[in-house]
Image (tube, rainbow over all chains, first blue to last red; front, side, top):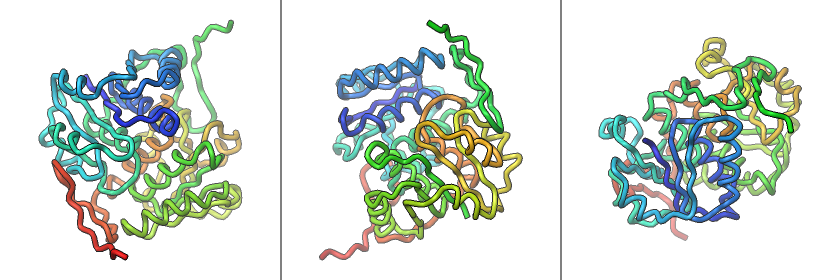
Amino acid sequence: MISILRIGHRPYRDKRITTHVALVARAFGADSIFIDTHDEKIEETVHAVCKRFGGDFLIQTGVSPMKIIKEWKGQIVHLTMYGETITDSLRVLDNKKNLLIIVGAEKVPPQYYDIADINVSAGNQPHSEVAAVAVFLDRFTHSSWEKKEFQGNMTIIPSKHGKKVISNEKTE
Amino acid sequence: MISILRIGHRPYRDKRITTHVALVARAFGADSIFIDTHDEKIEETVHAVCKRFGGDFLIQTGVSPMKIIKEWKGQIVHLTMYGETITDSLRVLDNKKNLLIIVGAEKVPPQYYDIADINVSAGNQPHSEVAAVAVFLDRFTHSSWEKKEFQGNMTIIPSKHGKKVISNEKTE
């Protein structure tokens, strides 16, 4: 079980970035995302993607981060540009155990740096939590997302040019 | 030389996503980004990051995509969820040649699917152009970003807990 915990989400300002974090989590092999601030719109967007493209990804907004952390049975990492390199982090993480990945929006309160078993960076340069989640999950799961079947109503077939889509969606 | 060409950028709506695309491009080994719509704010943000954290990443906004494409000497890929898998794409791409990476915001006009030498997907699921750029660059460059020295005024030292920063910034 791999879950993302998104903290500091501000619905107006972070709407699109947090949506990207959620969709990346789903596409790259996480099972669920928890978002601290209640946000129905993001829930709707993610549910709509799951309905069309499949998989059983779970989203929950309006959660208490500390409650999630306290009840988490497994490892906890915090993604930050200040963290350890991914390569060195993977030496201490066990990819057979549950993993909670904390991802902040803007400034993260100091306690999260301590709560995490390890702070991990996808490069020590400022860039994007969306990219950090993708690259970290890619490495942690040994790219198992590449083989994952989502079995949705819409399936896209890889193609060098044009679009190849198998759709079982009902027209209403 | 690796460049990103961001098309369909709408300054108000895409401000943060395109900024993330630019910073990810810089952090994961691209040399420059061209953005079709003029946007001084993104230029300022990226210049500020380069000034503090180093490197000679170039940003240019308000460009003609077709002019960039026409004058490009090298390979062109278009990142899209409809594209070929990264693994299969890398068999036809040459990482010693220049590479222009087209990244759309929302719906991309059909001509870009044809102009690219190959359409490439970082997974055929809907997620994020920010993640697609990161994962594609990671694979295309064989993760050379991990060794890159930016030699900026601010250098972050990887750390399992807390923040370790070497700063040569002048206080004014």
